[in-house]
Amino acid sequence: MPEIFPEVLQAVPGENYIVYAYFNDGTVRRYDASELIMGTGVFARLRDRQVFADTMTVINGSVAWDLEGNRDATKCIDIDPFVLYEAPVVKDPLEESA
Image 1 (cartoon, rainbow, N blue to C red):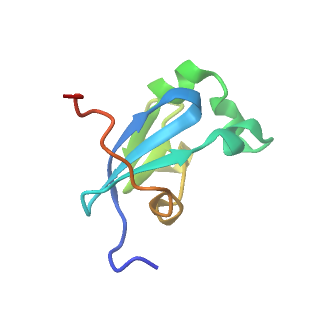
Image 2: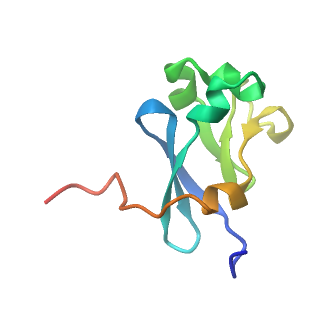
């Protein structure tokens, strides 16, 4: 269990259903959502890569997909921030390579 309550401040979609989650402790975590999306549950609605990327946002301190575009947290699909926080720490993918 982390010593802080993990809160996602920013989310960036990557290739092949990768999520880069930027946390309140300064870490960037790389989460592979492909198993969730390829399953039969609610995440299957994100198989369209354009929908996956275009609707990704941060709601209630976690990565979420706002499929209706109205920022209603009760109608979004999200991932528990503690699950995301267990993903590997990676270098910020938005930093320019030198």
